[in-house]
Image 1: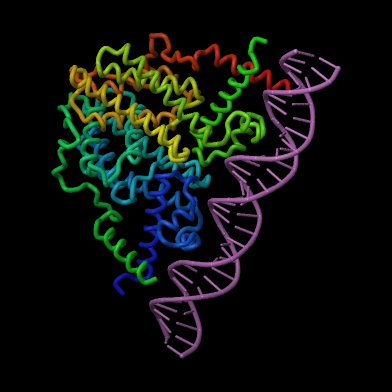
Image 2 (image 1 turned 90 degrees about the vertical axis):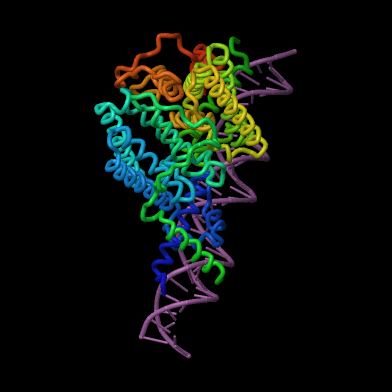
Length: 241
Length: 241
DNA sequence: CTACTAACTAACCGGACGGTAAGTAAACCG
DNA sequence: CGGTTTACTTACCGTCCGGTTAGTTAGTAG
């Protein structure tokens, strides 16, 4: 009664998406079979087709999710940042936090060539819009004096490259906590583009200052309550088989 | 008579490797079929098996090549650089130049999970050694005062991420010339880690200063003479069919 | 209890893929 | 010249993958 049938369906769908995202991230889209995803969830392959019509739609959903997070992060940063530099750094900070919390690990926006043409076109359009807006932050920062004069395109590519590389080495279970990563990355980006010399950064992993602010990711999908419910209900479902 | 039979074999083998690298880079390892690689070279799939015993060995050769380039770049940079920062930046500069010139476009060291276990173990070992050495440059730079105090691990990850992202947006045929990219990237990295504030960078794509030094990539495999020969002989081979 | 539906499983299909076998045309070599 | 090797091609094999179909089970609604 508490969770309606539609709720359960949506939650289960999200579980499938998470597992797929983690697998795509780990072994690549083409390197991951529907069988593997299903096995990780303890079901058979055919069951996945109750939630997604085909494999590429799974990938498309990953990208959609990631782009939503990107734009949400940017909107929030646009309001909270006081100049171009702050807005850019905040965008990246919120973005990486969301991706780490929400999907098991970040979806790297790399295998877009595996998408259906129409989905890919849509993604490319969105990504271009996102990157253009990021470059806008750079230009804004150069104008307001918060960002050192530089080529906006290259600066954004460097930052995005560093971002997209994160899932290749960051493990949530490792010594680095997500918050530490987030803070340290933000410091790096700040130093990269700031117009003023930046204070020395923390000297070692163990000494990284953890953020004193409240955690940054608060998107509708990421709040902890829902995350907990997903797991609990999934357990129930599995036991009742 | 000028090119012996073994020469031709080696050259043709390199052509296959280049094509494979470009394809792997473009569509991913699992997303590329042997048929596609063969078709791009104007031969049938079976012909590839005269040069490489199987598909994974092609990937392994790509990685081997890339790691050789990496260590060669580092050795050269170690000699030429006058402090930790210079050595690090030079390593990355030589490395990206080699990868762009030699293989059609860079091999991204991403799909290592597709390798045979033994090859993967070897790659991981080499990559770890490379990254450890890079972190060594950072520490060296912090000690000699050329690098701002920071976490070496994170700094290297950020730089490597930016590097590995290059092939996703850089097209040799685009407005950016390889030399320009190289210079601009080096400036970015320098700014990221340098202990002293760095002068403002070039303001726009068109205004990027091209390097006045001689081109940086001079590895045995990359010299232009050989590159030209490859193409010429390949043409001859194709015509004579 | 019956009728229905959501959620799944088992079994299967066509096609593509990595890889192999057998054959052939040209180049090389004594 | 004849024998051997090189560099392929054509044709094929077994396997695995994405996706479908038909059927089963469990829960729900009336």
